Structure formats: structure tokens, C-alpha cells
Length: 350
Image (tube, rainbow, N blue to C red):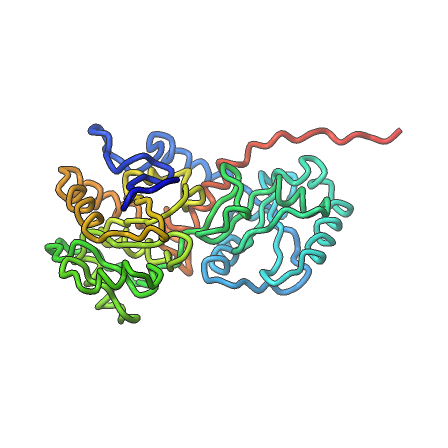
């Protein structure tokens, strides 16, 4: 890409403009809710026994695993299962993982029926392609659940899933209808230290947090800001969950298309976020950014977008005890959508 002084493009979507008839942040609301109920009634997952106590590197991984193990989705009868979960720790070596898949292949009939296509696993960083046949089949065929964002080389679009980031604000405080005083809010670490931050610090329309804040102050800043800025790939983007819950429309700055957005099968991200293309080497002009955000804010649909953020935000909440339509259930719903796998009959050796 050959950017101008500030190239505005939407990664994955072309612009912020919304269809005038838009009334929902969901990809397919007419099927989401009835399908969700069907999932609760019938979806079954068989979990292989972990060879060792599992250790995960992030809170979403741990919460997903514990929620799954204690959920009614688990079945002890593998013949009833739609999908099979392969549990292993975050620190497990590639060689050890290859041996694990080899054992599943030799000790159970299920892997060989689809070469692992009806299996899934958790790996926060994502797995790389490998020459080992077992790792290659796991990577190419099985559904990978990783953390957001994941390296491009570690994520396969349309097959893999990312976990919604863990929100810092654990209490489910209802957002208030406060007047939004700031055009933009940049939380500590959300944007890499750069000339952009230096310019924003001196701009009265932006609130730039220089260090971690307490929960109440953080919530107040989210509620008082029209937009929350994040840098995809370099900054800490986990706060996008909090921003949406409190109606602060996320502005995601990126220099490449984004294919690993959480809940991509569920949410229409073009309705709940703004994607701004920029090139770090060329620099970002604050005046250009402000003009773009002011045009977006003055758009008659801004209030609707902010409302959609709040609606979508409830699906990013991780609970120790899962609640309807929360992050755990939305990840399970995406797995449910991937349950239709052709199972080939095993050939008998004459």
C-alpha cells in the first residue's frame, strides 16, 4: 500500500458508512437465537483425557476450559459427540504434541474418520505449520481456538476462532447516559509509544492515560469518550471488550486486513467499530484523525453504533459460572456452527 499522509481504509471493511436499514449488530439475528437454543439442547463434545494437569497462559483459556468441563455440552459417549476436544497445556512442546496426536490416532477411531476435522484445541499463540504429519493434520484440519490478536501465520480464517479478550471491568455496571466529553480515549498500552501519542497528549479533545487507572476511573473515562483508540498488532487491544460494554466505539488502527476478530460468525464488526488504516513509517497526523472521527461522530447513526457496542459487549463477558449469551457460550456457538463435518467410513484391511 502506498499511503497518503494519512490513509483511511477499513481493514476487512471499506468504510464506516452503515446501511440505512441496519437495525442489528448481528450477522444473522433470525438464525442466531433459535440456533443458540438448539445448541443448548443438543450440542455434545467429547473430551480426551489430558495426559497431565493442564496449565494455560491466559485467563480466557482457563475460563473456557473450566466452563466447558463443567457444562452440559460434555458427553462421556464419544459416539454422541459432534466435536472432540484435544486438551494440552500452553507450554507443551511441538514434539510432545505430535506424540499426543499419534496416540489419539492409534488408540481411538475418531481422529482417522476425518483426519481431525471434527476436533478442536486451545492454543493462545496459535500453532505453526509443521512437517510432522500429526501436527500438520491438527493445524490444517482441526479448529484452533486462540487469543486475539493472533499472528497471521498462526490463524486460518473461516476455520479457526479467537477468544474474546478478558475484560478488566468485572462488575456488570450498566452504562449511564453521561454526556461524552472527550472525542477519543487512549488507554495506557493500547497504542504503541510513538509520535501519535506525543501529539495526542497535547490535544484537549483526547484523553491519553499515562498509566494504569483504578476500575471506577477507567469506567468513567470509557463512558465520557465517544471513541476508544487501539493499535492492532502492537498495542494492547484487550480493552476493546470494556470499550464496547460502555458504548465507547472502538477505533482500530491497523496496517493490514484483520481476519481474526472475535465472534466473527456472530457480530457484524462494521456496525460496532471503526477501522482506520495507517502506516507507522509515514506517521499519523492528529488533525486528519480528528477530522475523520468528527465526521463519524456527527453521522446521524453514531448513537446507533454506540448502542450496538453495548449490545455486543455482553457477548465479551467472561463469567466464572457461564451465563446465557456470554463469551463462553458465544465461542461454543461458533464451534456449533462448525460441527457439520463429513465422516468417512473407515476402510477395512483385507
